[in-house]
Image (cartoon, rainbow over all chains, first blue to last red; front, top):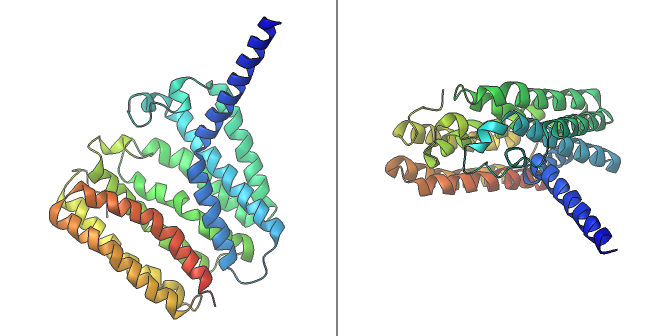
Length: 206
Length: 90
C-alpha cells in the first residue's frame, strides 16, 4: 500500500517534470509573442475576422515556433552545456532524450504546418520557410558568422506577415511592410547583444 | 552592413544608432501606403525618437545600461506599434 503510493507520486512527478521539460523546449514566451504578432497581422488585413481562422493561425504559429525552438535546442545541446545562461535547458540537463525531443519537435512542427494549411497554402509555405530557415540555416550558421543575424531576422519577422497573408491569401505591399518593420530589429538585437555580452558573438544569441 | 565583430565598440553602437533612426521612416510606411491613418505615423515618430535617445547615449558612452534599455524598448516597440496600427487601421 505504502509502496504503491510512493510509486504513484514518483510517476506523477516525472510526468509533470516531463511536461515542463517539453514546454521549456518550446520556449513559451517567445511562442506567445509569435501568436500575438500573427493575430495582429491577421486583424490588420481588410475583411471580416473568421474566428476559426484565428484559432488555426494561433495554433499554427504557436506550434511552428515551438518546433523551431525545440529543434534548435536539440542541435545545440552540447553548446548550451557550456554557457551559464543556457545550461539549465532541458537538453543539456538530460531531462529529455534526443529521440523524445526529436519526435516531439517533428510532431508539433507537422501539426503546426497542417494547421496553417487550413488557412491557405501560402501561409503553410511561409511557416515551413520560417521553420526551415531557423533550424537548417540560422542555427548552424550562428556559430560561424555574425551574418547569421540577417538569416535569423527572417523567421523572426515572419509572424505579422504570416497573419496578413493568412487573412488576405496573398503577398502585397502591406504584408511586405509589416515584414520590413520587424526585419529591422534583427541587426538591432544582434548588436545589442554584442554590447551587453562579453562572450564570443557566435554563441551569444538564443 | 554586418554587425561588427569587435564586441563593445563604437562600430556596433553606430550601427544601432543608424538602424534605430531607420525605425522612424519604416514605422511611418503603413500610413504612406494608406493602410493606417496619420495618428499611427505620429506615434511612430514619437516611439522612434524615444528609441533614438538611448541609442544616441549608447553611441556617446558605450554604457551597457543603454543597450539593455534598448533591448527592453524593442520588446515593447513591436507589439505596441502593431496595436497602434490596428487601432488606426483605415
